[in-house]
Image (cartoon, rainbow, N blue to C red; front, side, top):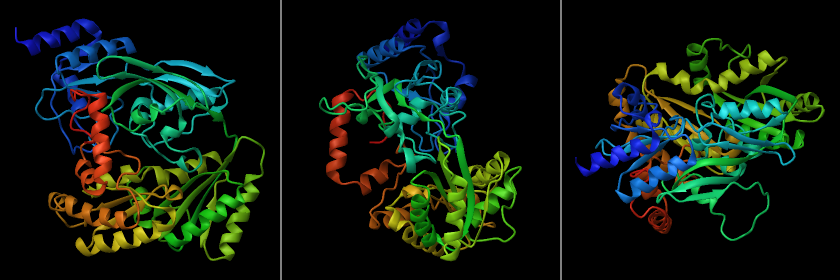
Length: 470
């Protein structure tokens, strides 16, 4: 028996019959990136049920130089969980590790395994009158391990921060199989380097996160949501300052939606409808929330009147019911799905300082529209924290393949503008396979060398998610 076959047999024996899959039909969905940009090959999918099994897997793989691709909910958009095309890597899914270990009401924490679905964590917290504020479009299928390993963002970053801001402690299995149990729930801990931050956002290239202690907050019972029509992105920035002041900084969501994007949602998403009688070029979806009985309704009405008098706002609607609130959020949450029927889409996840957001939108839109006449720019997203999803849908009469072949050229146009505005070409989606070249081209050499040094220190045999990030 060949050594590699013998080693795979050892892995199977370690996990037992329920811990591995070779059936090609079952494995197939694990090999494809959500948008179909990357398709890999692998003949073995491992599904450990606890940290000790993950440890045994990595110890064996490290000893025999077997490459491992960790996976969570597989909702990432950069190919970070897809194996290479050579078929020599095995996949390690954490979806069986989905237990809630503890919800500590006094400490405002919840301890969970990496395979827990994000929405399940939110619901369990809500049942106990707490809030876990990480919220993404894919929250019904993404896992917390993947969220942490990519440092996910979402709609509540403005108030609660990124995933790394919500993690107090983690448990990690290192490349050699050692287990680092850092499942602490301290808000203050200055004992040397904050090592957990190295693993958060590292996309499984330094270690495999198996559990985490997460922060909880009082559940908001007072929520006010509104959609304001604005004349331009400059007005959005001015309105942001007014909104934070008007709400005593109880602003938790502040999302930009363009008319182009809204029309796609109304056309392609069931139940979506025009929010206002008139049509406007730009909109802001705004939400205040509080766990107290603050009069948020009056605050959001006062904000609307003040902004209207300043000509920052042209029109608007404030949700009168839970159903109307959901309808307003559909206009934002449906944007990704609504672009699919429109043909090819070249997508970017960028961030710039908030004061440079409107400069970016104007400059990037102008460059792209000149480069691809009749292209449809769909700019939307978390403008309150400077993160814009800058997507370009193909011209209506252009061939999809011809359009997508321009992806690299469009990237350079957009990312050069981002760099000149002191921004980042990757705000919340990570690097994966998709943005490795951009990392090399736009990050300083000293940063790349430091990353390589850290990688070689933690994973000298390069068995963890090879070919990702670096």
